[in-house]
Length: 613
Ligand code: F6R
Image (cartoon, rainbow, N blue to C red; front, side, top):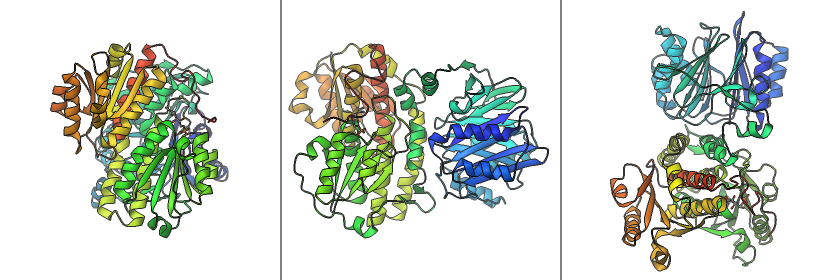
């Protein structure tokens, strides 16, 4: 994820900003830049590659001034070039903007601005914000108002920080949606803004977190907060502990909770540098497979364990539907011992958060022995799975500390969605218009995830009510069946409640005997071709005195009429809906475990990397 750092005070801004960016380097980036306002006016320095390059540039061509903003970019829109590196400027070179997130409607905004006479320099979505702010400043608005008007036109989830030469003492920072944090650090006569705490904790422990649709106007005298509708806001100052573990958890009680809430960002990170939205193409650079080899593939064998196996089941729907390529999904521990039939034109896809799971590694070795090429979808950089595979797609989800996998799971889904589109475009099963539609949906996903995670919805209340149950049943059909499996796994592993995931159609073949008022049934109901069937399954549960918690479109009146409780999720494209549907299941498991006094981050008997058979 990109890093944002801003400073206004009495010291030189550039070294403070660069130092802060260095502290965020662990998040990954491909280029970096900063803008400083001083006596010489606005100075901009940007460079591709490591932060050392920016530092060298600043040594040879220094900038002076005590107000500045900087950014480490990790490309979503446009290639890795100096021109695409943030900050971005308006036509007159008087407004500079940095942004984290995705401006979903940037193409239409850009077209309108170009028609009004604005000249664009970069291929990024962010540059539209600089031109919009310019437009409102020219219309007579002050900086905060111009930023508010500009943000009102954006669709998506964004963290935005703006400087303007006409306001040489102000930084305006704003947050729209839940894709990226904006934290203000308060000092004495100086003030910081950053996307993440590590950038500012060495300077101050007194911080203010901006929420969705809030903004801050920062100056040497302090900060003023307002809502994006212009109403003033009183914000609570929080004091962050120095303890490095507590600092890493930030404002969250547990790593699992933090990682659940990080998902809008981790999903953006999963698609960075891999999508050309203008050409509607997926670019999985560095994969060693020739297009002819991909066109000639006969089958994919996915191997994984636990949550990653559930992700593999979901990927099967994506790849089969978009690339028309059959996919078999195996547990690593089964595949390695079942003497699988692998043809020379098959591909073995290994999925693993840690990249160290011994059964998954053994399955990859088995594939190698049988002469099949291997591709790994992995989070941990440089892990064994990454080294063993012929090709790697990294999740870039950042470290996952909680033993129960959450953000890695949803990133595995996005990685497979990208792989499915990539295979589809290479194999000719997806035309341009279809790819454009699929990629637009992907661009909208992080913001929707942020909306679902805007609060915990009814999950805390449901957890309070059902925390003492001994069993739970999770039901889903089609693409939501693996979501049911994942919901059950999350609950059982951290709360120690017995939970089973079942394809809803199989309920009548056995599990229906278990139904009573003591066993909540969680039903995942999509707006898809099996919705009617799920509704009848809910009725079957109700007819036997069962309790139904439905995860469904909040607007679906029929579900609301039949279920005891509805956890609302937005209606979305069937292939990506599982990413949204799993979120309340993660939250439900989390809240139940907290109420039962369980060790959420380190559940008993479990390890983060399972390196034994
Ligand atoms: C469940 C969980 C485990 C892992 C499994 C595979 O929350 O974390 O089921 O998914 O042990 O681990 P990786 O993905 O590291 O191969």
